[in-house]
Amino acid sequence: MAEIILEEVTKTFPVDGQSVSVLAGISLSVAAGEFVSLIGPSGCGKSTLFNIICGLVKPDSGRVLLGGRDDVRAGEMVSYMPQKDLLLPWRTVLDNVILAREVAGEDKETVKREARQLMPLFGLAGFENCYPAELSGGMRQRAALMRAILARRRVLLLDEPFGALDAITRTRMQRWLLEIWDRFKQAVFFITHDVEEAVFLSDRIYVLTSRPARLCLHLDVDLPRPRRDALLTEPRFLFLKKQILDALLGG
Ligand SMILES: Nc1ncnc2c1ncn2[C@@H]1O[C@H](COP(=O)(O)OP(=O)(O)OP(=O)(O)O)[C@@H](O)[C@H]1O
Ligand SMILES: [Mg+2]
Image (tube, rainbow, N blue to C red; front, top):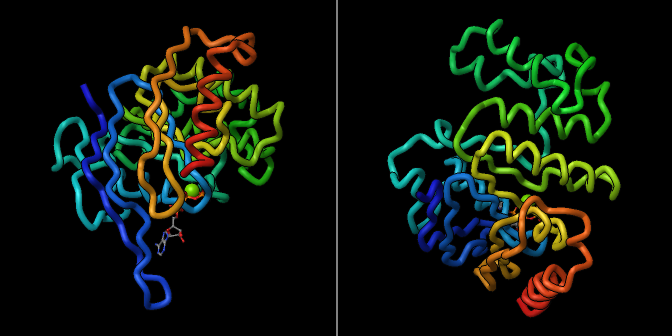
């Protein structure tokens, strides 16, 4: 079943008295439990598309269906990790990661107990009572991701979650994200600029052109799971990577 369906979504923003077309008719879907990536040049409209999925921005035309319906509150189905991590600086790590469940009115102590048990999985054991400013970039990302996962929604929207990390940390986080995904079985919709990252992680990939964004490639990543580092040099992996690069350069 499709968790997300977009049909011919368009969006134009007014900029300096002119209207700038950002999304020019985007149709795509993400199925239950699937890992789908969205890749495209900077400024093409990827974050805008996520903002539309979670109801923060209204499309000019087109339809957004969540769980097959257009009348669902996005917050009930989708949890969103925006491009800038929005950890609250005045809350500890523990109080940050339970936020969605606390806001939903669940018993705070029960959710905290659940969160404490998950801290080692997210590499945050021992840092429960630290404030975001005391964490490294990678730890902040993991805390933000933990908050999104702990919200327990059917779909996770991750907007360039590893964009600010060094290559080694990024590689570790990719491997770890696949373990998390395997464990929690949510659908993941993942924005990245990194072609190799997209191929390594995804079941399917959508490639967008520069603004106004149109789909220029839709790719099935027919590589076996679990994904291993050895894949990175296999001909099929390199072939998929090249197809995406060609689409990006041609778009
Ligand atoms: N609220 C807004 N008002 C006006 N223009 C906007 C607004 N939000 C986004 N834009 C414009 O829409 C375009 C797409 O922005 P968006 O953030 O979606 O791109 P992106 O693909 O996520 O880029 P990046 O890869 O750099 O994160 C940009 O030109 C941006 O300036
Ligand atoms: Mg963006």
